Image (cartoon, rainbow, N blue to C red; front, top):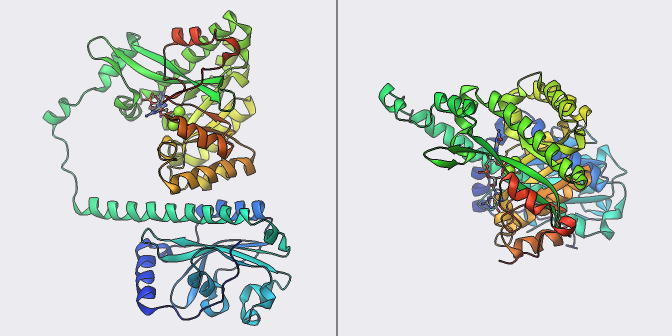
Length: 458
Ligand code: C2E
Ligand code: MG
Ligand code: MG
């Protein structure tokens, strides 16, 4: 465990100037307290059994609290806080008896909550490494002193705050840039050259050119197939198989995603029904279908899914619905309502591409998801980037605390597979095990003894 470091109230002036400039560039101090950080502080309270949790950013004279649990504090004069200790330390700070600190008398937390004995804090740094603020926990029970591993969880959560801030900084600078350089509007002639057009999609739907491919999801420890993800392709008569990212955005924009999505859902349900008829073991498989934003702004989605389940005689356990956080944001109120109805039906709800949305953590609490799918950008770097490794570790830990399952997406190498197993990730999918394949190829795969995929090799 890192020992409590001595408070140093002298910070090098150049470093402090750099730090304040980095803090200003995030814009965090110009905004009102934001609920998007509450999920992190609440998670800390639950995970560490902390009495008080504070996420604060320190300027010249004050620590501005952006989120708190346990005690309402909006700002603390810097000299009455423990921020100097965080600045002086080169990592997390752990104090097992706050009252023994030389300046304990003037600490705001101490004066409001004299029962607090234990303090731990991890810095929130900018991409240049400057300490902008800290994520701190205060406990009346010193139990954490006996459990040093948990401090790395605090560091991981502070790093997640830092990533969210960095993303916001990039988004701010991009939106300022695009406001300065407006894109030329499309002329009619250039529009007509864009392919595909909505009418091409409409025709594809009429001519039944869409197909579903399926990628197996496995239990990592056993490599047993536990489910499949349905992934749409457009089988174009001249252009061949077209991947979803080349037509789903247009389908969304034109509204055609509704009939295409309805087709996908009913096709997947009929396919499961078919597999179950062939082999009763298939009743334990869960087939997951991706949904996009437009499908959520429709109130009737849950009724539609219920009707499909009745029609095909499937149990709701056999169907999963995947959605990204960004698809829920445009209309959070409707999404919450629709998700609640789907949840009551009993279908699984999976948050796709988790970790890429900039307020991911915020929505974990409010949306009723059963499964987090770790975005493949983290899995792909897990063996090369310490940061990706830590993010994946934290997501797995968060899911455990929240009682959710985790699926790692995009596993491509044996090394990534081994790391995920060590981290305790239960489920996964990726080219290492199986690529997305036709329904016929899946039928073949399902005849494997015990449905266990062979040991993968690079
Ligand atoms: P997603 O839901 O995150 O699906 C996973 C994507 O990762 C798939 O791409 C899959 O082929 C790919 N993938 C799986 N394992 C690996 C791997 O090991 N390495 C790499 N590099 N990639 C891997 P795909 O099929 O091109 O789909 C892309 C996205 O299109 C999906 O991302 C999903 O957001 C969307 N999509 C697919 N089908 C549908 C659909 O029926 N409806 C809607 N609304 N969206 C869909
Ligand atoms: Mg998906
Ligand atoms: Mg995904």
